[in-house]
Image (cartoon, rainbow, N blue to C red; front, side):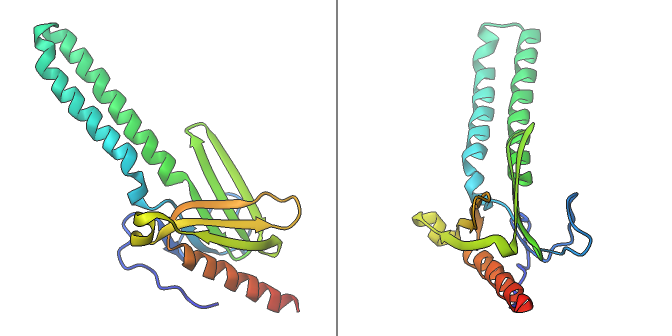
Length: 186
């Protein structure tokens, strides 16, 4: 398998080659080759929302003294700050724990839809029939992020990695695993 270079400073952990991670359904001889999550730039929507909410809370503090007393203003600020913190924390956790993994045996897609609901999809390398990558839009082309769709044989669940960095490298890694796997079978 051709080696993909590890990024030197991957602070966001959105594209990790040969990471030192494990997961609870991992087989004894299974090695994690790649872990991907959405490109950090795609998270700007909720980050801007949080900044606007914080700005609104600060702006509200200039208006509230004309209507409420100090104790009521404190309660409004505590409620507003806890709401904003809860929103930011929830969105960060959903981004951080929604991951795609490529191992030596399987391709795994773990999607967190909300804090209490997750969807786990996995298929073996042998079941992969087609891999498609889509990079679209100005920012996707400029920052090299896009979608990877892994189609499987039969009625197996298809796997999708959305808005991930370097989708062409992900396809290259999966294709090399498929080639290595076909060579060991023949």
